[in-house]
Length: 114
Image (cartoon, rainbow, N blue to C red; front, side, top):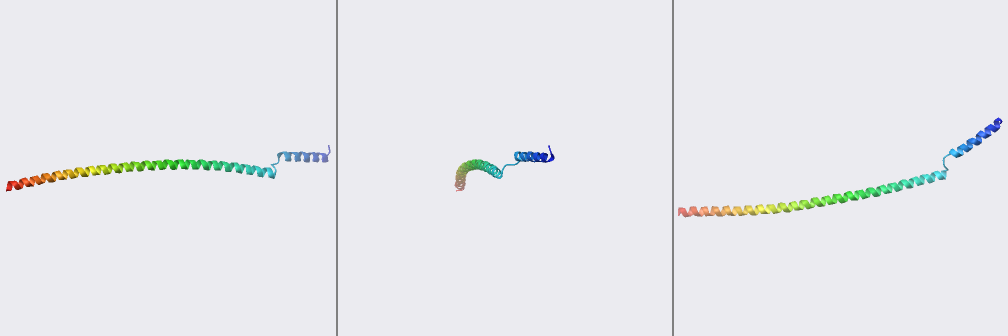
């Protein structure tokens, strides 16, 4: 084999190796990029849906918690009002009893002076 034949054989071998190892065509590369982009969009959409579900769940839990706190505060307020009313009634009754006793004592003192 001569030098020219060797050069042609090396060139053909290089061409075949280049075609076999070359990257995809522009059209195939663009399609791969679009496919990958669509895949990532789908994953992002799925992630957003999951995040929205999680946020809605947290919102519901917080709302339930606030409702529970509100109910507890309402009950505590009612209890405090009932206790205050009971204490007021007891204080009024005791004040009336002391007033009556004081009046009887004053009447007794006046009777003994007369």
